[in-house]
Every structure is written in structure tokens, then in C-alpha cells.
Length: 267
Image 1 (tube, rainbow, N blue to C red):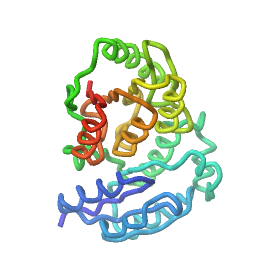
Image 2: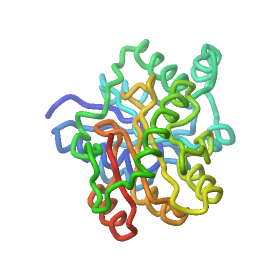
Image 3: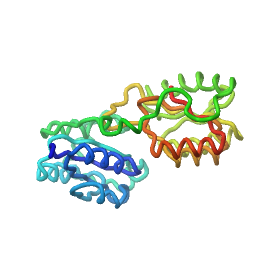
Image 4: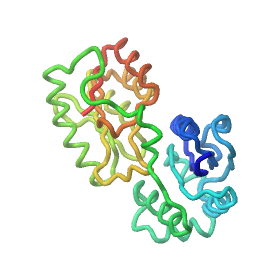
């Protein structure tokens, strides 16, 4: 049996996908789940699980020590609305928050990682355990991008990268080289809905890895829910950063896209 790894799990399917990869690689896995965020069935994919409220950093550290964890991974998000409404920080978490220059995603995650590393843990990237789930390069749908869409890809890609530098969000929605929506605190799905309503169909969504993004704990993710939101919003194109974006249920995503004539591209 390889070393015990620790997992700090947020919401969504990603913590389960990562847990499968870790266990398949022969590691014992001790996980932290967040009440009201993490899926309850995570228990089926880990060796031991401790539930905490958002902000109980001391509880996390003490638990990992008791499980003899040396390396820690993070997967899944915490809803920004829940972060502000359900946050119950202990003294250690308050100390971390007081040191931050701002409360942007990257700053929060780096602050938590630094605190863990100050206590002797090493925060590592989950990429090794998720290689089969990254977006491939090129067009992976039956429908290829049109000339109009190619122009929107070039326009939206540069815009998304600029927004990423400001740590505003990972996604933009454009049509005919016009900005319809920029992802902010509401998340990708809400931005797609907003942009689709304004664009009235055939909008393009571009989702990138932010230039300053620390891939140990903050990877772009898409899945079936993304495709369904895009379809409902009248979207025709989804572009993601190849080999840096996780695609949940990749085969199902491609089939859903082909059924709805949605173009999928990895750059």
C-alpha cells in the first residue's frame, strides 16, 4: 500500500472522480467533506471521511495528522454564496483570512495551502490521477466550427485570458465578436444563461485556465450539466483549454454535443 493521501473535497462529481483515480493508484485515502456542499456518496470511494463546516481548518489539520497524511489534494468548489452565508471560521481560519490581501478564489486557496504547508503537509496537484479526463486538442465533436465561430474563438480566447489575469472568472460568452457575458461570482452556468438570453441563440462560450491559476487546486471543469445549460441557452460552440480542462463524463459530453449540433473545441 502506498502513502496515505488526504483529500479536501468540495462540491460536484470531481472529488469522486479523483478519489477513484487515487485508490486505483494504490493509495489509502482520508477525505474531508464539507456539510451542505460535498456529495454524501463520496464515502463509497474513500477509506475514511470526516465532515466539517466551511472554515473549520483546525479540524481538517488535526484529522489529517491522526490519519498520518503527508500529502494533500483539493477537488471540487465551494459555492461563493454558501461561502459567505455558511462560513463558520475557527481561530486558525480567521488568522488565514486576516493575512489575505483580498478574498478572490486564488488568494483564498493559496492561503489555505500555505497554512497546510506551514503545518508540514505538502499540497499536490491532482493531475496525475486525472490524466484520462483532460480535454484533448482540436475539435472533438462531429460539427466543425464555422468561419463566424472561428472569429469568435479568437476574440473570446484573448478576452477570457485577460479576465483571468484579473481573477474575475474563467469564462466569457460572445457572439459576432461582441461580449455578452463575463463569468463572475455567479459561476459558468449562470454566465452562459445570461449571455444566451442577450445573444438570442448561437452564442459561443470560451472557458480557459487563468494565467495565474494554481493547478494544484483550481482546474477548469466542464460536464454534461455545462452542455445542457449551453443547449438551453441556445449556444452553438464551447471552447476549452486543452490538456488543462477536466471533462466529466467525456464520452457522454461528446454524444450530447453531437445530438444538439454543438461544436466542442480544445485549444
